[in-house]
Length: 133
Image 1 (cartoon, rainbow, N blue to C red):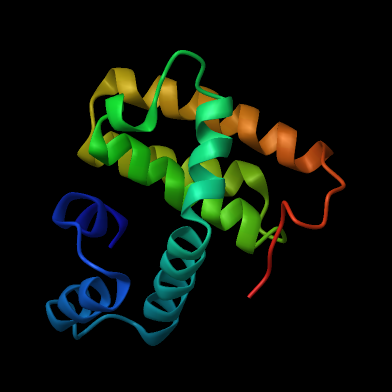
Image 2 (cartoon, helix red, strand yellow; image 1 turned 135 degrees about the horizontal axis):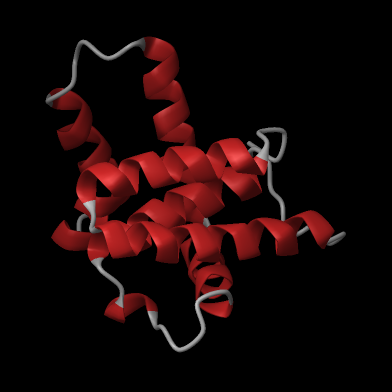
């Protein structure tokens, strides 16, 4: 959904409607979780992008491959919205998606950025950094 929103420049509700109309047989728990990640990612998009750029020196979001930036956005949204999920699990899932849809070089880049973000967020005590549903 994040990739579709990013590339198609559609609003969140349009994306949700289109995305789920093509995936009607999806497990309800998977659908709810995906919707939650998408909601956090879109609601806090500017904050998430700032976090990613902070940990990706010399890279601007618009210069990153669309798949890569959206994989990282989803992972950072999960870090922020679901802090109970262990960071290594979030990172591993993001890397699996990157292996399937991006380049081998991107996997290393995404791993490095997300590892740095996770360490930073885990060390933060600010209540506004982590958000819940």
